[in-house]
Image 1 (cartoon, helix red, strand yellow):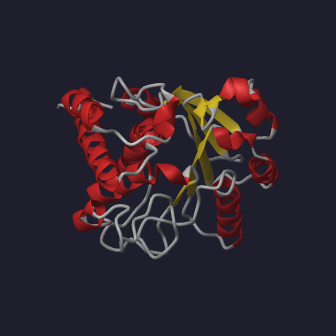
Image 2 (cartoon, one colour):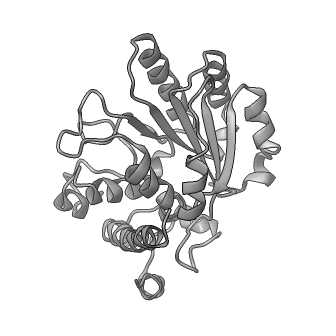
Length: 272
């Protein structure tokens, strides 16, 4: 990827972080840490990986993307608006009375939302079902699922991983937002996942690792995906709350809404 392309994407990330900040504070909502963690991943997917049709978002040949960490939906909504799949007006009404855009991924007719998620461990089993159905029907689209590291505590997640490897679902791509934090603390203290890469390999997956907040590294990593014989997982090492110093690696931003001084600091740091 050329330097100019990377700079363009980095600029977009700042712009979208500002939008997410505005959405969450206006609605007195939460999960800004989770949204900022995965934003570069979403921007890259919708810029270079997913086959989408903004003017016809329900096109039957589209790739299916599932945000399994559904409470980070503000990040996905910001990207969908950037791609003109949903409107700016919808975005401005995020989590307000009467809006379809609520604080968790909900399958209610919104373009770009393929499944209701948020309860940990739901998204990947749905994605595996979609991928298996597509294989049986000889469909050419792919399924991409973004999961949290906390979801790797769930049995349903590992059942889905086992099924996908067994059925050689090479039309399935999973990305783990590995920010090392979950709702009540550090992943390694609550339920240590390591060696995470070895576990996925043992379940017959092609495994890649990358810096999930670096467009340069993401570009290099996605070029290595072959979609041959096996499903693929990318373990994306990220920073929760990425982009604003007072949010980064601080787990209270799983829940809190930025107020006054915090909002002032964030706005000063989100300058292009």
